[in-house]
Length: 392
Image 1 (spheres, rainbow, N blue to C red):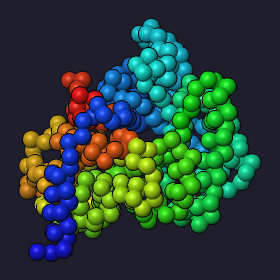
Image 2 (cartoon, rainbow, N blue to C red):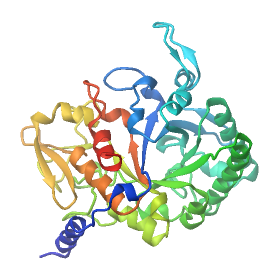
Image 3 (cartoon, one colour):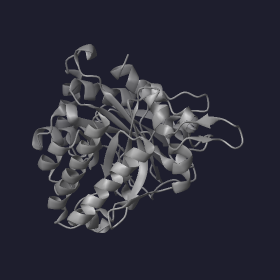
Image 4 (cartoon, helix red, strand yellow):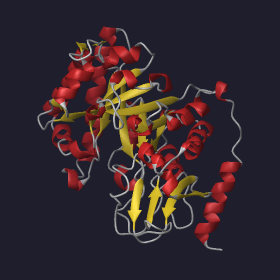
């Protein structure tokens, strides 16, 4: 028996041996959903603010605003921002919307402004490297809170030190300085408002990108860390494997798993478990000319799904054969006819991840992103699976 298989069997045994922990005895766990500003239109691929399932969330992260090199920020879709974030009356229906934050607060949900994202992280190094730019950035964040009613800021810098996004080794020292300046500003503003303003950061799942984030210093400043435990494998890899395996199965890498990411932050970096939120993708990856797991492939299959969201995948699941990986604790689909493999999460795997978070004392789960499991009948199967564990 190979060493990888022995490890995988041990991981599976460890999962089955986890003690049953009464959730009532633990802190209330967060369900944090990212809501992209361009997804406000009604229909199969979006949710209007009133259609957001607030009853299944504790925090909504509004994505994204963009950092500019001088420290100011702007909306990624300013027309959508005005429509979503500010009070307005719809011209066509006459329906009044109080603005996203007010609407969320009426359901007991906090709203954080997420700044950055994969496409717009290239200016963070310039902002973080200059004290005047850091101060201007913090003031701009405070201004957005006052204007739109946000309850805090989520920094999504992907990633400090990442050369393709203008990063350098200097980011390791500048990232905690940026967070510290922002924390000081939010604390002062929060005291004047009589409430705590949260500060979180989306952080990478693997050590290769995390090593330049000065996690020890940065974590002291943050209320919680949102670990992006998805895109752990994809079409950029030579062989097809799971988007977000809970554990490493045969052929996988233990560091590239939800469990590996949790251990990186909690054990290696010493972050308290309650301040770690683990990621759940509401989308998958497709691999064409790939009849089996760990098979070679010819890239993504764009002919099958108009975006591999859970909603799109489940609508066509009947064209595929579903498999369950007992080691990685996730499903996948195959089609010999299409020669396509689909890696994704379903309610069963999402429950496993929620149970893992609860058993290990994690703060909760983050979701990229909440429109992707909205089915035509109005149901949200993946959100329901999470809440079935966290808030039964």
